[in-house]
Length: 467
Image (tube, rainbow, N blue to C red; front, side, top):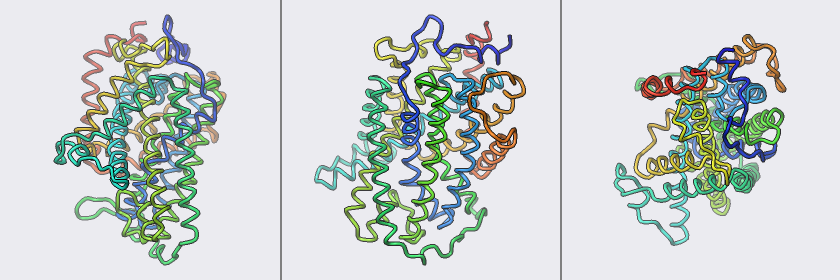
């Protein structure tokens, strides 16, 4: 039996260990995905992409990025239903390609989720500090910035990560309930914006519709256009793959996980298209390069009560993004440790809470320190290239698994034969190409560090290799 067969036959609960609690329904998983997806993208990146890269055609950027994600989502759904495991793309790569490429993808995902949580915590801190100042309770400036920005520590960013750490330690069902409540709040916020914007559209703001064209490179090396905008707003879709990390905690994973992945992606894509179109319809795109473009646009209309409500939704929305990405990070580390690629210390599940408490605490402390002390703007650029690389591997994994294990039960099968997986590879690969070269270089350096760890530790402790 080879490595692929060993992984495919591996039980979800490790031998002699404690499994995770199966308590999430398809509805829970869908809201988990919506909680991760709707956040930074719709509240921040929409305006930035419109103002600097795509103009009103940012709607097309969301469609292009959403289409690439749709191919990847279908691939995730097939592998989640047939392969399972708590490691998301890491587990699927293990099944399709073996240990080395699985390690590379797992190491990539650790960077993606860890940096995402810390970066979003910085954005959350800014909105939270502004909200407190507006009611007469300002936080000292030195406690809202890290040393590099002239402060001491970003205390709100540290505090929100530690609070989420406690929630995840208590249990995933409780965390899912918190996520459900917050998802409804931010969907309500978006609904209010849509209703208000519909009555304040100025069609003149949509002209010219393609001010930057489809794709161009400026003399300073910056890329602009619809396709460059798609590479940027792709970050808005990061999170639906987090649903696949919940396989071991889903009540009926072969049925519910594919539903959660696809339903959350479809819902959020529609929301993004509608909101981005309305945003550029009520305010000229050139004015939207601000930290809170949706609230800013409402302020420009003089509708301050709606702007305040949107700001509240931003705080809530970013909280759910951090919660779900944090959750996914701990489950990926758990899966890698179970396979021996990380020390067994990280594979322990608490018998009382049935959660990986050690992973949750260690990740929380590291991310809190990073969010509190380090400016993560540059590192956050790595999130997109890492996610796209994982998506490419998942699409390739569908093709490989169909060839190497044609008899593997597939409760959900990606339609269209091999056409859609190939389109997923091409579309996600193209979005990688549209990212800045310096982002590629930083990503390669991170992978080199991972290779050192793999050959120094993982290759000698791999359970499947030893077996």
